[in-house]
Length: 133
Image (cartoon, rainbow, N blue to C red):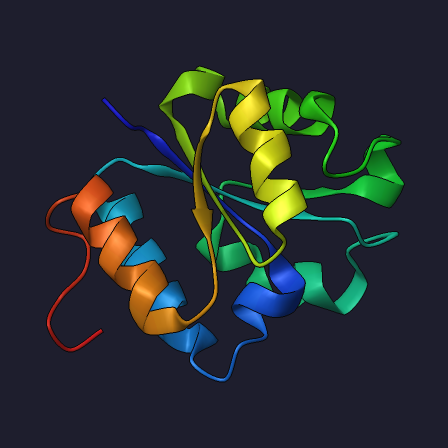
């Protein structure tokens, strides 16, 4: 059973339709799914303040000393979520980062469009994506 969603910031949440994904994360959290933001940014700053309400944990590579696509950062993120790495789905616009997550044991979703990403998340987590998302 999948229990966590790990989302990249730049390229995913900065997508013009990023707010649609935030709505889905709200629904997922209401259903007990844990959520994390994982970014290769140096630190959180304004991003942390703006997005903290949608995530159970925020992981910035500059703060933890390890960056995507290293398997270690995906395991660390799952640990901070309190769920096994094998129960997490990562959403990232970089195929290399998705491959790193998969190598760590996560399910990978390569973000190329919000419609495709939401369709994949809807298949992996039935009931979290509404027709209006």
